[in-house]
Image (cartoon, rainbow, N blue to C red):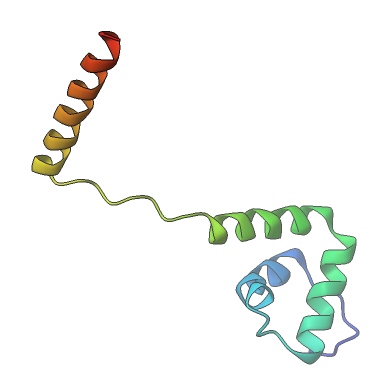
Length: 84
């Protein structure tokens, strides 16, 4: 597709992974960045994707034994604080 043709929102959003990791090159990069410059909706969508990509991964669930041990430690600590 020629560089001069405008990029539709769907095509731009399909490029988000390559935009974020800077692997989109030459004409494709120019078209995506040009579209983003003029499209507030796609800029907002890219910002949301970027935030999601940078967010910390959720902690894995604790196994039941570790969870119980931590709860008991917390209860002991909390009971001691109430007595202060």
